[in-house]
Image (tube, rainbow, N blue to C red; front, side, top):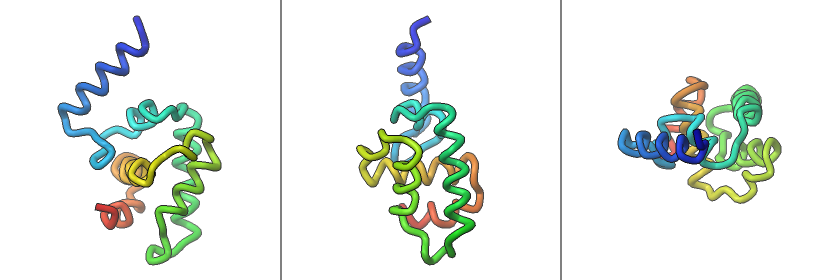
Length: 107
């Protein structure tokens, strides 16, 4: 089976369900769409958790999460702010409940 065809099918199904950068439904699909490996996906979760432990809520900034992404994977240097926000929202929705309040401020 061709991997690109499987990815395309997943993207089409997710899009029909409302998946987008503004409303990321799947962290895994978001990672696939942006060239993030499985290992990097786990490292991002750890890094985002570390940011939440280091900083107070009022001091959180999107740039904190951008820096973490860029440290983990070089492709993140090319991400627009909307893509960084999509990663914050996806991890909040699917993995890190403590990130939800900050993610809600990004709408």
